[in-house]
Image (cartoon, rainbow, N blue to C red; front, top):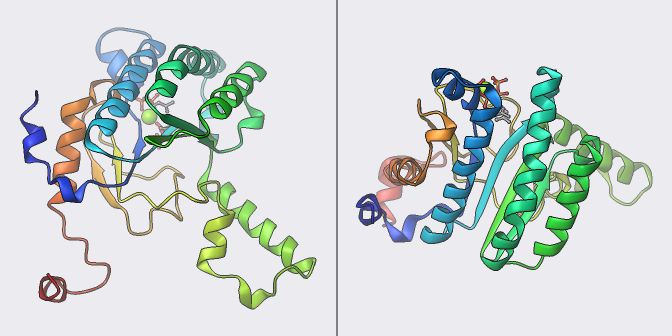
Length: 250
Ligand code: IPE
Ligand code: IPE
Ligand code: MG
């Protein structure tokens, strides 16, 4: 058992952790391997993080697996990533189901290859009622498109007279996003040293704690995840208040 577990404050486990899984390519290159080797190893990190999340009681994981911008990569890499996705879903769905994991997606999956759509739909249908942990895969995801679509949907409702302009609220916008019903992440982890958000969850991250680590995604396993949560637990989330105000109410 890792002793980092004993450092965790059980009463302050984030409900929702989001991940920008970065660095598969660099990790592979460092070993003299093809980029896809890094992506395949990255799938094992996803498995390790799901297992740890269940162990410590994180309820939602959102994983950025493919951005709308990632279509600009070499066709061979895109195809390899799509194959890997189908393979991972095919191999892992039964175990996820047995462990009470619900799979969801955000992003426009209709633009993915037919085989991906099919395996994703089957896996999300099968695991729909599970309640131990929700795994949200962001696929062909763009936060700006998500917000744009929410605006369109609200404009449409105004035009049809279903709602008035004054009824448009932060809650209503939140409901129109792909993540409707999912609480905002308390913690965002980005691996591999890049300190940017890359069009991920722009609305939902407004008060999220950001954690950047130089570790590449294929090396990000249980202990790295626990270290990130311990770092999160040491932060003071002030939400605009002063530190004194927070300590007064303790
Ligand atoms: C993250 O690793 C995986 C995806 C974006 C699909 P990268 O493939 O971006 O790895 P680097 O950034 O090139 O090292
Ligand atoms: C962001 O990673 C998207 C995913 C993790 C799927 P990238 O590696 O593509 O991000 P940028 O473009 O370098 O910021
Ligand atoms: Mg990258």
